[in-house]
Image (cartoon, rainbow, N blue to C red; front, side, top):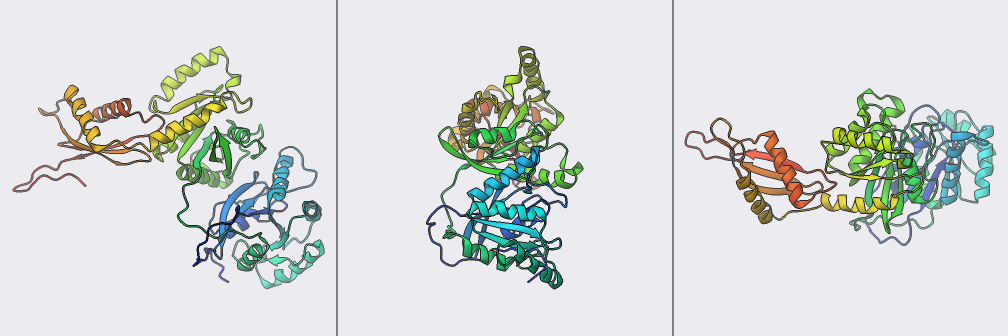
Length: 465
């Protein structure tokens, strides 16, 4: 067994269609026993946020896992404690919900500490659930600790599995035990049809991302608290909006630049950036009754630079009065001038006001994001545009656009072949007219220019590659 970080997936020769829904494994335990580290070990990648302080994980967060050709869902949970109060009570409730909805429960205990009163209280909660439980003695980094871990038999959950989630010790045996306990886990299926469209909910702390997720999921899917920064891990949920299933990812609120963040905030920032990259469309939430901030601008820039479709949601609209609406209109004209193409919605996740408008907005943005313009139609339009408004003369001559093509979609990318570089202002003019003609509402559009190389002695002109 290697002490390095190893990929735990193994290939499966035979590929079969799944026979039922993917089984669910919940990972629970008191705070700071290494649940998220164990989740990362099971899924074979560092995805769950980990830090050596209690309370980093707050929501129940699902991840896809596979072992020996079998697939299942692993749900990371926050630390469970009896008689918890306030936010800790909400976190504990999330863990209990994960247990109720799971097929198998992994109960994690710190082998170096042994069974505590909190662990024994958790065992009572697990027995009430009547779910199969696998007891994991985590932090078993050597043989001496493994001998100490045998004392966990006293919890009455059967044989403890000695595991070092950090180093990988005993992880293979644990994964085999998980498969044995799962109810007919489906085989891995390759080349599946595309599933629900992926939507990232992003924004500053406390703008209502988790409230919006809970509104659509119809349950307390994410912990909501008036204190900013409740969400740390991306919370992934399948929800129905407008009669269609969507995959919504609630992300941590970003306070600082990634380079200036530290600890949990740094890793949460990386997870949020990863969620945007993995999404097809981002819903950026802004707080309607607060000024548009520099951090709001940074988040919008992250989405645009990632090339994702964009819907801007002004949340908490129920708190906005007539004076604020006047100033907000001015702010939008000033602060969002560079992205006039973004779709904007005014809604209230708390009251449900106008939330039914989100699904049509997402569909419009995605349709734009995937629009392809036929080459002949594009060049016919471009020829008419250049004839009506030619490029300004510079140095006695004006660059000419020879030909254009759409290089790709998601987002739409266009290449202009020219005789010389274009002015930045004229390139923006072409993009603005392109949008007026073909739409692209809610999607960034990338336009690159390839000037023809100048003729050398006896050579022929070539376009820059």
